[in-house]
Length: 467
Ligand code: BGC
Image (cartoon, rainbow, N blue to C red):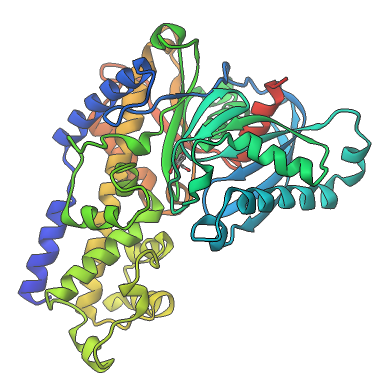
């Protein structure tokens, strides 16, 4: 690599490094921010939202029955029916549809278009899989609604949207009750369905992993439900005495909003550019350093900076008569999946990356550029994984006393594309958790376990306890 490019890349790697000292300091700040958030009635920007979920217990695997679940969390909407068998197992039928971009944001996007679309998908699913049983039933079928955005929840099936995240922007939904919105459209379509519970995806993940987990076999208690996907967040069970404002229940931390005042988090010039491109500027800043939606955008912004400093893509720019491929110049067009290929490429001259960059981004590269891109990709993903360890370590620190009379390990039920598929991400989270050492002086371990279909099964479990 020529020395100017090498120097620039080294600087990026340095700026994205997260050391043990920062991890420990941020973990303590996270615990403080949780404690303050639990005391604060009106959410404040400096503390974690710590949203009560009205889920007052964790499943033990014996729950039974047929429930529906609808799951809106990112680019896809899923509808499933879950048959809980009462022995830690379940049967699941599901359909998945992409939410059209025009329903997520833009002039045409309104509460009615989005929720009308969701209700129509629920009806389609019922017509296909459960037509006779649902129509004939005396009671309405209970539906758990996984809605994975910050909601001010006031009961198991009541909650108003605080703000959109992850690229959604429909202003007329803010401050509205999202269960009412869905129920209104389910009723308009005359479905025999009652939206009985509202759950964040992290709550669903916690509940579904706790249902599948048999602590006697796994030797571990499920203590956290976490998502590392398009967005990031986590939920855990908090005891009564620690929630002055309420009774013991599962708390949705909304940790994407950790350190919104940037007291501790790394803040490179690239993070500032990415934040400015979002619809929720100044909020969810922790998420913008961690989750799948932002990894590709960070890489893109860094590459554009190197280009503007004449360090990469100069030849290409000339060859194209003064332009670069639009997937490089326009925000949000590099997916986390592309980074996962670049991350692990060990082929000669990074030939695999060459193909990936050409196929996914229409971007021809020199070997030197690919070496730079790989180093930057690793710096961005490494920082994301290390930062992801902070909330896990902090919550473990906070709940460990709940389990002080038990020798079992702790497990984190996880869902989301990044934690499930990004090469080495889980191992790096655990490496950073070990540096923080939240269980100092104990033999207990912390495990990461993927909760498959977490949000669907979890929402069904929420519906199962609803009236
Ligand atoms: C939302 C959370 C959600 C997380 C993961 C965040 O953007 O605010 O409610 O749990 O994404 O889907």
